[in-house]
Amino acid sequence: MQSHNRLIWHLVKQIVENAFPEETAASRLQQVAVLLTINALQNQPEPLTTQRLGEIYGLNASQTHKLVTRLVERGLVTREQIHNRLGRGHAFALRLVETPELKIFRDAILNEGN
Image (cartoon, rainbow, N blue to C red; front, side, top):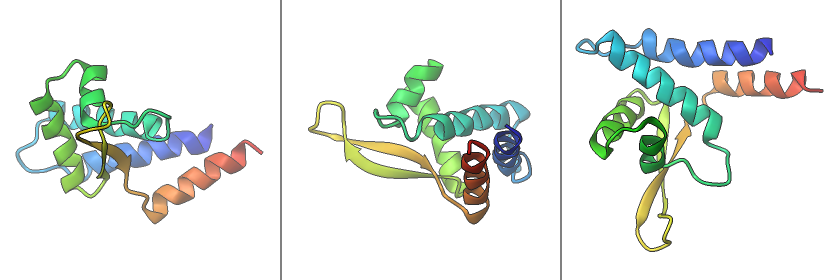
């Protein structure tokens, strides 16, 4: 559990310590929530898309896009083009960028379970 807490703190620090000058504290809190949600849901069978993220938080497409774009600009999240739920159009699956530090935390979490 300790490694899991360190992983969460690492993700929070990425937002708090690298804030854009015009960002409010509320904006940073929203980004932390989105980042933690992506971390929690990125490996589920149903891809985590911007639309699904908006549905989870009750945000419109514009609000969700803005939040995700900030995380992409920071280099914390990637968007991978996939087919949408209907299999015809495009959607983007959201994933955390797997940095060396993040990999260390994930490996520690896996090792704690053994």
